[in-house]
Length: 297
Image (cartoon, rainbow, N blue to C red):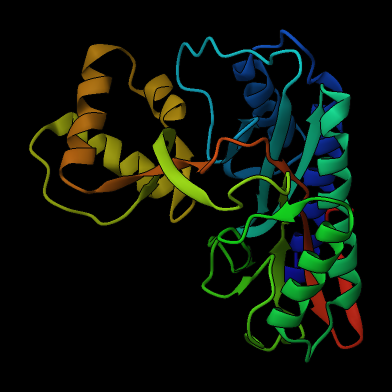
């Protein structure tokens, strides 16, 4: 299968699972059930998870996935972001949607979706990332919201979710030039106009990534590190997945050993600074000469 075919297949899986997941998000639903549904469906459809399913509620903008035994549920009146990453042979599709349980917050969802649609129309080879950011900001503000200024879309590469270059959600300079064949996740985040409009790091979100192979003492740690390297490579993974393979107290202690030795690193939850509700919309695009192909439509 070619790289293009893999990207298209990953996008098709991500799109289908996003819509299926959206239909099961309801008040009282345990977050762990949403995460595990996404995990199961991606596998059934022939893909792999490019990162753990994020289920981010209200002022949590990104990077929350359920740990083992999670008791978090979807509350009435909440704003729930479901962010899904799928890969096929390392070629990634990244997409997100927001489910709203408070009619007063529906405008935030509409603003994020409008910002995404406007950005996609502006993508083409030769376009400047800064110009796309300006379009996103203007579109979101025209709908009575503001974007989060320190969250961005991102270029993706094989087995790499964040490949260095970004698509801002606000204006500010020309930025870099988009090239034909590049793959980007474009993801506007919108908040009320009274909000801070930026995120800050919160507690760990139970998402981790391999950083470097280092000397570890226990044989279990060596085996765990080998599993992480072979199964996830450079892609983020959930602590839950490792604890399933290495159950019990020994598994927990071994995982902590890998963290202490800096073989793996944790992702913090990203929280809106003023604790305002956050909406998100996201698609993956392949840049073409005169536009783009949306793989996750």
